Image (cartoon, rainbow, N blue to C red):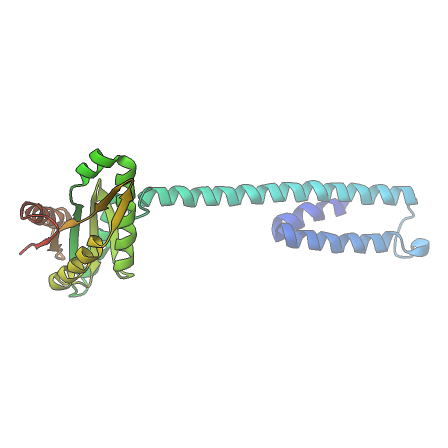
Length: 251
């Protein structure tokens, strides 16, 4: 009677695959014990029919236990994948696959904590797509989305591994650049300007050319994050006001 415990216990403790292997070995052992000639290894005498019923019952319990363990494991894996998916949705922009605004703020907070321990610089670049409303109005929102996806892909390919590009909102992107001075950030901005000008998007008989405007600021260890972003936003406005397709640094 006690052998019926081995299948569910083995499958629960060892997992589906290893548990089945152990149960299979156990079946071989009890079959050898029960069907040894003259029953020399058994204390009591059992009929062949009874031994077969015991074996069939044990295999039935094993099958049900294996089915339960497989279902439990599949459900766990599904829940785990679903959790990862929702976790990604919480921190990623669904269109561009960049960090969203909330994740960008959390990254800024972590980077500012590092600034208090090291003398490194941290620069911010706020980037806005020029004439984006006109693109949406003239060619439709699908083309507008395509513009954002193209730019997001370009931006990710142009920055370092420690940098972060966040979709800040609408057609705005925020670059978080650790260990980067204002001068180095402007060099990156000029590089991005050249790369963006090379992008052309075809729509029917039209060729859509792109450009961006950017404002750059540095975040100090004791400065408010919102103040640093506001300064970058004011510089971005100056870049727009001065003719677009350029970067304006904050003094």
